[in-house]
Image 1 (cartoon, rainbow, N blue to C red):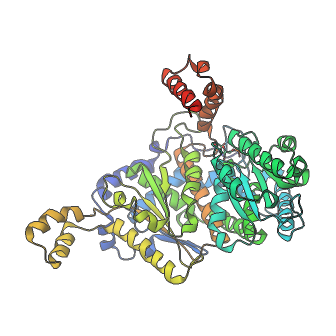
Image 2 (cartoon, rainbow, N blue to C red):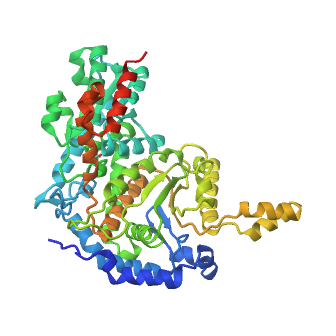
Image 3 (spheres, rainbow, N blue to C red):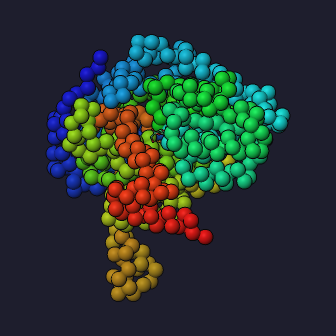
Length: 553
Ligand code: F6P
């Protein structure tokens, strides 16, 4: 059994050396100076795996910074922890589980084990059954109760049973060969209500997706969907219009999901790591079987890269170390994810769960409090839209927000000319953030425009961009199922490496339990506020007002 270091990262020799290095060499250095001194930064600070290239030269790092960060990874035991994950040790210590999402994309001969038992065959059997079902739906062998072919899928799920599905279906819409997929997740029911107005129940397949099959949002939305089908097509039609993915076979059975339409997975698949499992059923229905296999192949290629590449050339390791540097040493509180392809519009939301649910922790694996900041706040929006919204703060605000730019080179639907504009915008932004615009630059510009000296003096300070904002550019040859698979697995492993360095368990999520429990307890009080009279007076007052407005005309 692999033993993770019990030492706090802050006690590791490299952490101390990084602090000294920051104080003595980097605190006063900016990215522009680093580039002036070393024109070979791109070659020095970029890594490639297949059709994916990471340029991290626009970070406030020197070669020594990277050396020390790599030593930190060694001292924290990253390689050993990674190997422990791949061999199926129960590294999710609070839930006593292995962490084997890599097995889901590892293939029939992947050789993965959990609790000493081989799992690759079972994984491949479920995948085959699921893709046979997908084929049958696409070919029209499986149809709705009236004999019509399915045209639409409603995926009912939340968190890891929704975000990856919606992200991948939108992200790969340009190569999709299947049905149109719609996600229904939120508890308020509006997503379903809007879809119900425009979809035809006779041509709609509902996929209920839930690891536990007990999640309140999913169960209540699934119930709405069932009533919708039953009212339109009769009770007997429900079975023909539902399929499901879950680890809870009894609950799928009790809901009335036909046994040939139930696709299982396992406890060792974390919710937010599950899009590769039967949770991907809606993805495969949307993008087609071949594309789904390509997505898995992309993930598998990144697993191999992560497992086999020495730390210095290892994309997830380097990406994690840069995040640790920006977070723990340079003090960044958040990171922006900025895709320059609108199809990736849900990628930031997907990463929010992956990173913040995984690494939003303040207790170490051994139960002791952490002594350093852990997961950063993740947020973002697609490229040039965001330039006309929050980039102002990135350029001239008072906070340092490191950015990840995601940049496909080939177009994913428009022409190359449009994507060329996206490329120009993305790289211009990365440079503007890194190098800024000095007061001298502003003076020169305003003088050239013929302004009076007084106006130049008044305006110039407003035009200054401090620069020195760190960013990574992830260049993709094209946005394909394979590169998307690589990208997702890259971030999964990056999150894992960060967690190892901080000494936390990236695979549990106790922090979402308390709110859920309290919501269940409070639910009856919404209709009858007296039930909450002994609780928080502010909550009671709001419930009382809500009760009045619930009944108001
Ligand atoms: O939000 C907590 C969480 O447990 C996530 O980790 C998970 O993705 C989501 O709920 C959905 O859970 P389930 O798939 O069991 O419905």
